[in-house]
Length: 416
Image (cartoon, rainbow, N blue to C red; front, top):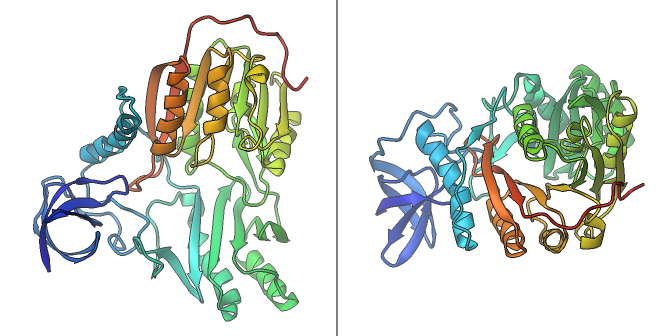
């Protein structure tokens, strides 16, 4: 047993201490605390809190400190928000950009509208911190009321597929038409398994059940509202974690692009920004997910009052929009996956575009992409963290970049 003093929280929400010259990570320990821990290399297991932090509060979930889904549930709200903001500030400093960061926008709202459970046999839950050990849960207080039936549905699917002995992921999304469930890890299903899953889908009142994107059962076409458009979701489609999160990010993007007449939305998905922007500007949207692009365009066709919105499937990692192509736009919005978009940021930096809005779910890749833009002549106007992953070490970021007047742009869309 080792006595440790916790100096600070790391970017994964773990307490960081020193054991001699070695740095040690202690999950669930808070800055300023003295703890006893079992230490193995850089990793430690919290055994006892000898001196608690004044910022320590009672967790809201009985599974906290066992389930790895929440990292900092015991941190008081003010200190918690300061830590989230600090994640962005630290990443920027590490990238050579000591820039000011706005206060965190709380976008938890009604709670998470999508969740991925793990199943091992008939056991369903989340993984322990830094582990492949499954922690069974009976409820999750972070889920929106529209996912109140998610855990029973996941258990029903897991029981049917338990004889396979394969690790299973069960992704569940709340939609306007009920729960949309995607199974991953099972592989091809037998006729008997398919029949049992269809019956379970009916019993659990699922809107849709798919297995690795292939339809198993469809009772209602699952859809969500994106701005003014109703969008039917492709299986496994990406959505922001909370509705409040999507609304907050959308509002920040709309504010940042005020007055723009011709906007590019890169990594558009099903149109969280493109469909909102199309309420007042011409939009050209791009994403590698063909089904997501098609779903967005179907939503456009069914919605009156939108400006022209063109879209195309394009792998922006392998083939980013070039500086020449970007000259068609007076504003660019890009929201890449966690890895960021260094190649696309480099093309934006070389282009004559004057206004850029970068949306990111990773402070580290955001800071790298931001440095590319700043080195290309952009100034940072505003960086806003948005917290839709309550108690988790993840933070969304919306950053606005601008630069002086450039050459005049053609009044046309890149796509037509």
